[in-house]
Image 1 (tube, rainbow, N blue to C red):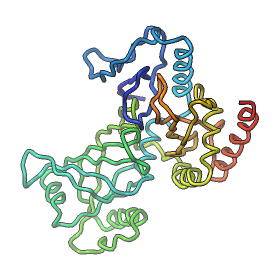
Image 2 (cartoon, rainbow, N blue to C red):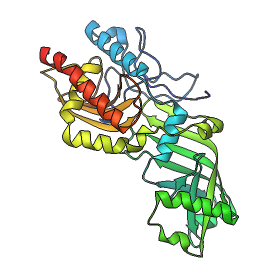
Image 3 (cartoon, rainbow, N blue to C red):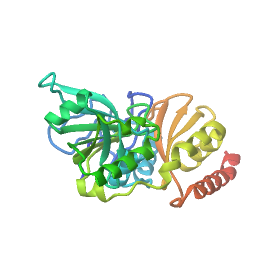
Length: 333
């Protein structure tokens, strides 16, 4: 797989926003300085004003390495699948940037409704009076920025699709586009208006940010051939139910399964909010009473399932199994 990504090391004295996603594509080792280690010379770096791992107490070093290695190796969706999943299962709105016809040299931004086809190409229906319609007819090059359904900040996923947005022609193609769009936007009564036209973005380049320390791209062939994760379709509903009614269970699963986050009576986990669920695990935003030397007070981490989930019923079974498995350890602690 072709990827280009920036590596942000786990920070010893971390000062990023509370929602920071602390994982990295490479494990931390003695000799590592907690600055953003870029793979290329003169590449952009974050000046985190950190310190070398070996300058920290040995017990802190061990916790950093254990946490980092767990997060690095925790099963996650592959990037093409992750991106296709984000595009497929979202609220159906995005920001489209066009070349402004009215203000040459400036980009024009519009919030637009869309629905992806079987290849992940966004489909739109635009009024002939809209400025972005006029922009596209003059220059079809544009980009569409799509945020994940659970997006609340920089720790959450978003993708930018760039390409050319062309009019869809032919009755059969238009009818197919309408069918796809109406499934996502059943209340789009304007789809039958005579002055509205159908467009489709032919994706040519992809930029993906899955959170802190997780950014890059995939090829067009990888994107088009990937399939959305089936479990993620109802992941938001599962997360909402767990967050509303069973947060205590999420806390004990985090404590039992993620190194360095075990039960700590002096610095307990006060909140564990599941932000997304897929067939391989969950992302959880954890908030503790206080920050520690290598993690802020609030941070996002990966909580993997012991095996891939097959469907919604299987997710429930896995969560029950994981919660029950933590009971002895929790009692001993």
